[in-house]
Amino acid sequence: MKQAIKKGAGIKKKGISAWKEKVGLNVTAANLEVSNADKPMDWLVMPKAFQEATRLTGFPIGYVSMIGGFSDTGKTTILNHVLVSAQRQGFIPVIYDTENNMDWKYLTDMGFEATPVYAERDVEHVDPETGEVTYTKENQIITYDGDFIYFNNNILAAKYGQYDYSTGKETKNKRKEAVIEDIAASMKELLDAQDNGEIDQGFVFVWDSIGSINSYKSYKSVTNNNMFDAGSVSVAFSNILNNRIPSSRKMSSPYTNTMVAISKIWLDSMTAPMAAPTVKYKNGNTFFYACHGLIVHVGGALTSGTKKLKAVSKGATYRYGLETKIKVVKNHLPSPYNVTYEGNMICTAHGLIDKEELPQYQKEHIGDMLAQLNEQLSKSNKTADIEDVVFTDEEEE
Image (cartoon, rainbow, N blue to C red):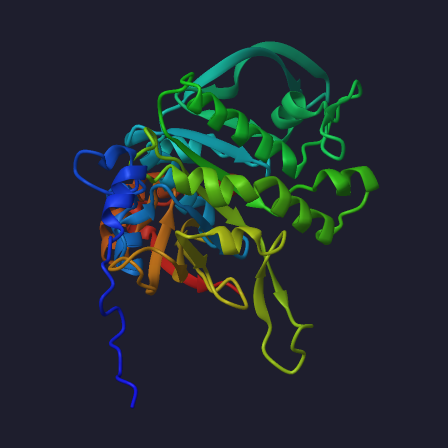
């Protein structure tokens, strides 16, 4: 009869600790800064309204996160807060404005520090009686500068338009149109400069928005091909999203980099024709899968799902805010931060507030609202006073 032998009996175990120490994989307080350990959790701090709705401090630093939703639901307001927090917390904001729709006044009113750059321009004047057109030289704001980096489509094309991304070579004929790959090239250039010691701060990359420009292949084929664009996003951003940004969370990295992008969405009613349409993100699933931080959806699932907040007086109407929904639809953060809550918040010209703060906001800004109403009423020789103003809301269709 064979005797049962206990597993491991009589075998002297060397253990793994000595080998890990030998090759430098052991983690101790002494070698923590060169280890594979993550830095402590940190956040780009968001306002109270965002925190109460999501139960999170803000967007996680060192991660890729995304904001999705229909047009005019509050996505840009959230992204502006990201930029303000990035700047205040000592990061370099890098803005990719491929919507070509940057509202600098809105951003600076929310607390972003940017210096206007002036230039002399010809300003047209038309005489209302004779129709005569004259021109005068006037100093006007042409852009803004400061401790941030800003790209729109023209700037991207001017800086990277010589690249042929199908061959990896430069060409003599520069593109006048920005493409998806230009953004990845810019991010790589900045991250390389950081690695080389030319830049000694962390970056917060923001992109408004995924799905707003074509890929190089679409540009060359003179088509808006969604499959081309999705493939290009995957190839161009794979290393950045899955390696370079996440690895900056490690203790061994002197700087931490973050990305928060807005994504256009569309409703897919073809995959399952008998079921309700599902929300899909533009340019494929690359960013969706690479978002190991947060994906938040703003507004409704099938419609905008918002309310317009209005100040009304004597037939004049001024929209001063927007009540919207926010939902955490994906959260891959470590416990205990991996929560998925939803709630409501209000977007105003000065940022996000919650419902409890609305009466105080109305009281503080009634003068600005009244000025807007009286500008409209002046065309009919009417004037409104504070006591004439009524606050209403209207469901967005």
